[in-house]
Length: 254
Image 1 (spheres, rainbow, N blue to C red):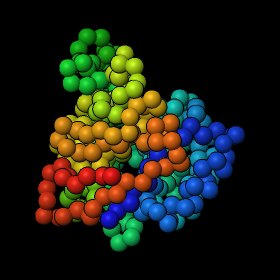
Image 2: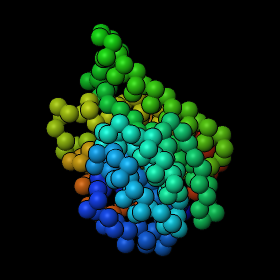
Image 3: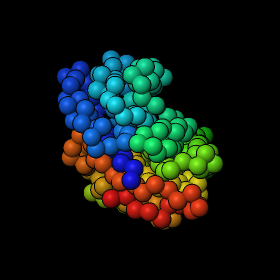
């Protein structure tokens, strides 16, 4: 059994140093890796990133992260990424990584993702250049997620996880105002996950949303925004992949 600890939207700043560290130090006892689903800082400054870095350094389990919209606010995402990588975290944007823990090879494909909405009520690649670029940005994020998941599939991982900040499905947005759904996620992410296959999809961003959801292809989706899960992290369990099985995983995450 593979144990996946995950949390997003921790929004750390100088006054929150040490807040999560005591809980994170228990991770080796209950999890094989930690996923951070974006919005790790409040305003995306390197100073705030250094606070996060101290929380996750030398935890005894691999740490894999994506950035969120807050982490881009100060227009220094590369610096934020560098600070977190210096602390040992795998920070992904349109890439995948394989970590080994407890004898299992766990593949994580990550991208921040973007908005645009969901089937039947989504933005189209039409009209003004800025509107077309909005949708193209979402599409590029989804395409990179699909490619990364496919590459991880070729590497024979024991589990594959899609890690995003924006949501791939509307299910986990339940509780948020309907008017802002297009700014909380995109169906293109779910299409990418279903096309490439995954055992679990993890995201944040929707503070007033719902934890559990599912893609139309049957991949479990979990909203791990801290206001939703109400704790330092939540642990999900995945069976080790049957390498004879292809396509989207049929196994459930508890």
